Image (cartoon, rainbow, N blue to C red; front, side, top):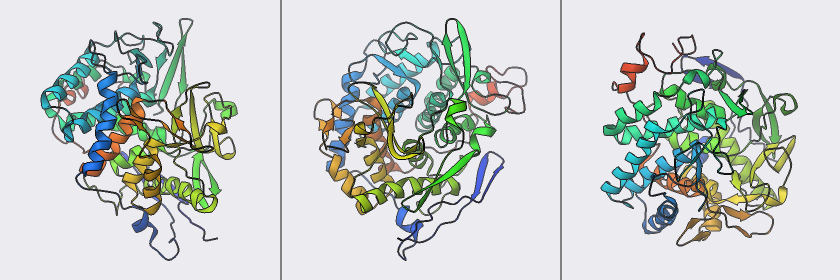
Length: 460
């Protein structure tokens, strides 16, 4: 078997705000691997692609709460988390770009989101709650009951990235977005040691915990880096281990879940976001080239995530596009892991239980891999999922690996993910660093007037 040495990290070091990696890659059957893998799809959307985008936007038309301007995370269920809000902002940018909505509707929708940021109730730590009601903007739990549940530094990092992209495309709103974020207490989100911390609140007690796992915490860290906050520990890959599947080396989180209570599945989503939004570059890189990436380590990790899924189809004839997703019944949410709990191709719930019969070819992952890797395999994936939608409601979650049956749950994440893939195709990487002085720079970097900012080495 031709061994794909897609990733063998030899040195990992931190320099400034970025990471430098030295990696080892070999060719694939005599073809230069980087040229083969790092060619995305670019250009104006064709008629069919615009139809796909319009189908995805149907979800948002149907699930916007008129009183608040917020969008349900799941079809007809009036709650959202911070990742859902971030996804909505990306989808809103796509809808404007593709002229699915008027400039006036875009302005009104974005204004209502910013108004929410300005007034949203915060946890006792001064950070966004994990879940909010989309009908009344209050803090709730997952059952949509009024509750101060806690916070997710990972979800907030995702939101910071989407807010940065929104400001870059709508600079007239930058001041108002900054004012909303300046209400937050970043001291609760990033420790003095530079680690992202989430928190659970139960029985009136706050229980902070180290949040994240390899891939997703590196991605979320870009949101804090945009604000000049350096989560040192979370932009370093260590601790990590290496597993080889079908001759392809994959890195996975080295923390033992028995002792850290961190479920550490390897799945596609963070690496796809890093490609679509940052081109696998360092945060201050202005370029957007398929052929080069200033963060070679993350680019190589993404290539290996793609290659191993392609190799499963090549060797076992199992179509594979794996991400996290909801299901119609218990356990309601699972990770279709490439590797987890010592096992390849396992589907796990948050409690670590396995549910392999629930594995999907994810609609969202298929579209995003198709956008980032222009290959015969991603063409086949898109053919497999391109009919999986309700014409009036949006795209379904995916197709079951075991039976080809549809998982007919319809979510904000999947429909926003389709729009994000198509937006990347038309405009290239979504995040561009902004060197212009902003409202937050006046407030956040003042020695005497620094709301939400800890004066520690982490934040200086």
